[in-house]
Figure: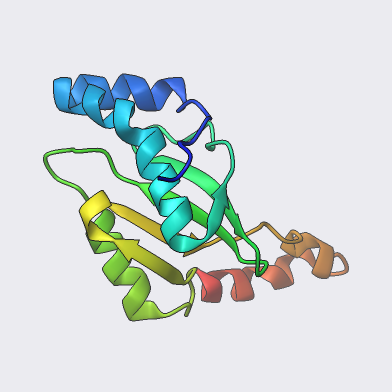
Length: 141
């Protein structure tokens, strides 16, 4: 049996999950450390402390021995969950303009996605002509 996850979920996530899901949400929160531990084991990743801004889903960085820089996202037992649509979108786009979907576990409402890290601001590359960054920015959007 995998070791349970030791980090606490963000307070806003707890508030939203219990407020929207009631007892089912409380049970999900109680089981979350085991769920994360099982996913760590199944996907050979180590999950770090959750992102504090994760208010409606559990979201945390995940690293693997092979250098995979990823994010684990787990949806609570909401009446309507969007995580499957998110996974389908990422699968369909296969990294074109978005991160890659690496893994999906529908039974646990979980996905593992490529982690996007911020780069340099466009103004660094267009310092001589700041307005020249508008067209490439619009193209990316």
